[in-house]
Every structure is written in structure tokens, then in C-alpha cells.
Image (cartoon, rainbow, N blue to C red; front, side, top):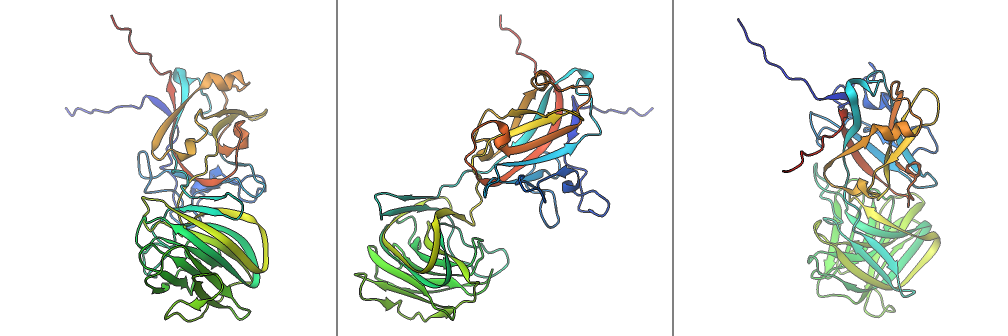
Length: 396
């Protein structure tokens, strides 16, 4: 007769994220099961994406999808966590299982930086493909490092670009006024390049094509300035001495409609995503209603802050037991990595392993490890329970 052959897994499955769909009406969306920080003031997590597909379908350890867990421990929030209420398996002693296994995939940390030293001298390091957009589907948006303050209404920023590293002939270092911190934001930019002179660039519409006028033959050190008047006209100009100013040859003022509150500061891109570019600025001055301390971040470059990661389990009553990953920068591991946690550790903290009610995964202060605060995304897949890892046979 027919011969049937099959195999069984050597684990109990907690979640492989394969059953979730985009049918939120039927309660099948991933964020309807893994509960994140939506509407919770002290939880900065987001599970899945705002638009379908809700689960991650390109970064997966096995199968067709994984769970994207976005964390944002900024603005007073110190912890980001997502939790799953269990229906099965609830008995974490069944079949002599002894270890919790989960796979995670982080993203590399930011390579950008901003330092003032000595006072009045600013060194900005940026990576990124460019500050540019053709306005076509699939085209990249801006990728650079931005040090900024907030401007309300009309104002200007002036700086002397002392040097800009030649990571590419179109690497750019200059002054910028920008509507938002998103990669496709409207902006106006006056920049010095290593090989293409001084440039007046920007974007008139969110996500639209960029404009450029550049004047060759000019290199650092050189002065640049961006001004916004009350009518929303932006003018880029440059100077050899910081006193006599002239517009970039061929450039005209651009009317760019932005809100009253915008970002104003120093921008650097390497024009090569695999490299960094260092630029040095001095004589930075701003006019208008400028507020706030200097802040800086990558724009349009996907990166993770080194927030500590943890897993927690709990019973229906009592406090959860929390175990932190040994690597405080685990969120920056750019590749699939298995994390195995002995279940006895949870039992030692008072968890009844025969009736586990909930599992949570998070990043931040709840780990018990010092958290600097930051944001990013980690991907989670294949949460399983295994028997104890076998020890290697002794060698004769």
C-alpha cells in the first residue's frame, strides 16, 4: 500500500507569525494579538505597519513574514513593549521543555554625529545616498545627518564651511531650513561640495522632485546662507569673507510653502551610503525667532539606537519576570540572531511555568539595564520552546 512519511518539530511553537493577515475586520491583524503602546502614554512601541501588509514580509527568519516591533524611547518615554496573551502553550514544562528561543533581527546604529568643540566649532559627520529626489516612484528621499533648532516665522542661518571631506564630488555640507524631519520634506539648502562648487537646492513639494543650481569653482572654506522672508521666499547666497554676499549664479528666490514652525540647522551627506563625510563649520549665526538647544539625528537613514532588549513572561496574577539580553546593543545586530533563555530563570523569579499567561518583548528601561533613549525597529520571528540544549559529548 501507500507509504506515508512525515516529521514532527522538536519544539513547542509559541508564535511563528504566519497566521496573521491584513483582515483586521476578522481580528487577524498582528497588532490585534500583539498589543503595543497605541494610546498608552508610557509605552513607545508599535507592532506592525500602519497600512497593509501589517506584518513584515521581506525580512523573515523562516516562513513568509515576521513581526516588526518599532520602539521609540524619546520625549519622556523610557520603555517600548508588545505583549501576547497565550492560549497555547500555557504549560511551559510540557515535553520537558527547558528553554525559550526567539529570533531577532536589528539594524545597524547611526554613523552620523554632531560635536561642538572647541566652542563655536561644529563637526558634523553624515552618511547617506544624497539630499535629492527625482520625484519618481522608487526614487530615494533625502539621506543625511542634521543638527538643528526650531525657527518660527521668518529667519536665516549663516555658517562658514571650513572643510568638507571628499567622500564624493557631490558630498554636501551646508545650511538648511526644513519643514519636517521626514526624508521627503520640503526644504531649502545652501551647500558647499568638494568638486561641484556651491549649490542652491531644495524641494517645493513634499515627496516631490528636488531643484538645483550650482556655481562651479568654489570650495571650502567658504560662507553660505539661507534666508526665509515673511512671504515664504527662500534665498540661498554665499560669500568669500562673510561680509559681501551674492546669490548662487543662476539661482533665484524660491517660494516654498511651509508651516510657521520649521527646523533650521547644519546638514551633511556623504553622497555614498557606504561612506561617511566629515564637515567642519564655524561662525554659525541665526536670526529670527529661533528656540531650543541643538539636537541632531539622521534623516532618511534607517538605524537603531542601542536600547537594551528584554523578554518578560507572567502568570494571570503577580509581577512579570524580566530577562534582558546579554548584549545591551542587541537591537543593532544587523542579521538574524537566536536568543535562548533558560526557563528556570523565570521560575526563579516566581513564575509558575505550568500556567504561563502572557509573553512580552520590549526595549528600554524595564530591562533593568541603563537606557540612553532612542528609537528604531527590530524584527521578531519563530518564538519556540525547546528541551535543554544538549551538551557536547566528551572527547576521549
